[in-house]
Image (tube, rainbow, N blue to C red; front, top):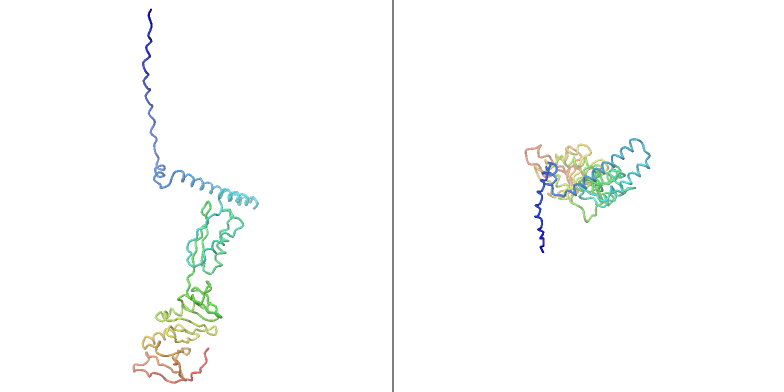
Length: 311
């Protein structure tokens, strides 16, 4: 009896792999790959940008064709629910003013839906604060309000009826100041002195050598200045021609020092002469202008009683 032995079939050879076409990488894709962010992040940013442009375009069309305000508001509120809502506020340029006050103004909205935020209204409210000279308000979609502040710089402290207030070079009131926390700024005293600040700055500019020595200025009778120096003396200036009088006093002090020499008051209300007074003297004196004589001038000359009234 015979037995048939079946031989197995020979193993099949694996079919050769098909060559995959080489995918060309474009310039844009290479640029994206070089960025320090993931492609997913870039796609999300692009989606927000396109969506934001669509929302803005839809609102513009609704406004242009005159769709009633309620419908436009509903669309804007829908955009807010979709993520276009004020969630962050970025403030730049702020140095002295209270930051929380700026936040309070920015958030004082009937709706925080980004399309409904009234940028011009926010700016106008900010300009009511003395510290703020100007402000720029803008949106950064989807959820950030940008506020750039230009602040005023304090130039002097105004004293009136015992109250101290910081003012800028134009006399704009900035904020109250406590006596124990007064900054190292010139002091202007008297009713209306704050409104005279531009003229006062021009007056000091006429004699820059004396400007750092002036510690206070009193506005007298709503028409002229009395200056007080760091050495304690007071200089009464005329109503008209005050800058020229102050310059002349600076020239006289430069030629023969007057400040810190024991005088208590100088009076230049009469442009023709400089009247001076010592602390305990019963008379006042007129000092000659050293530029008008070559010989040494006498120390003083009596011209009037010390009780001359101010005005």
